[in-house]
Image (spheres, one colour):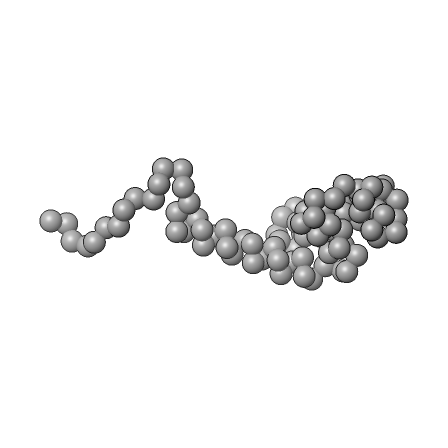
Length: 88
């Protein structure tokens, strides 16, 4: 009775297929936005978020002070936020 085939329910608290699709689309949009950043912005984003470096270490990598590295990172994040449709 009732008609169609119904699959099992997703695990409680686990990702749903539509949630996984949205996450994949968001990740693709973020990766594209990072690729569009100027080289210096892209580098500080990757050093901070992919490699987990602090601003002192990032500054040493890019030949700047820790404060200059932090400001570069802030500008990069602002650009990403704007490019991805957020406020800034």
